[in-house]
Amino acid sequence: DAGVIQSPRHEVTEMGQEVTLRCKPISGHNSLFWYRQTMMRGLELLIYFNNNVPIDDSGMPEDRFSAKMPNASFSTLKIQPSEPRDSAVYFCASSLGLGPLTDTQYFGPGTRLTVL
Amino acid sequence: SQQGEEDPQALSIQEGENATMNCSYKTSINNLQWYRQNSGRGLVHLILIRSNEREKHSGRLRVTLDTSKKSSSLLITASRAADTASYFCAIDTGGFKTIFGAGTRLFVKA
Image (tube, rainbow over all chains, first blue to last red; front, side, top):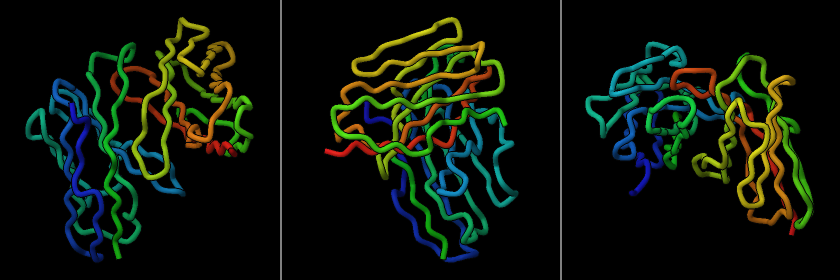
């Protein structure tokens, strides 16, 4: 398996522009997670899905952020409009989703977002 | 905060020495996991220890869990320069959500 795939790997955009990050989880995994990592705030869970349904989006910072999972093999995280403080590395991770006793998360390589 | 808190924040050792990192948390857990992150890369799962387990080994890694003290430790024996990375503990309090700590930055000098 290719692992979790994220695109793009790097994104540089100007303030006010829309940004869309993409993720393809590992085939057969039922849970998908979006994280944001910065030096100041560390690794933050933004939202996670189970069986394509958003379970907890309490980590989404503002209404400017939205995430979708239209099918089991694809998810997007959108920021509209983007702001300089959104600059961070965004990680997608997936897991089997069988439950807390067995689950480990597999992380993608991340998207480094820079908003000028 | 429910998240695990790693200690120390940073650790610098010589190759061949052992490295010990600690994680403390405040709530009851189902399991606790340790992850490694190399610079510029995603996190990689190292080991999972369940709440009813006290110790687990994987190669040069040894993880202990003391639920009465709400703490865990990760020991890396005979460290190598390639072990240089950030190490995170992550706690699972139920459901499908895992909460990560701030991490310990380990630097192993060759």
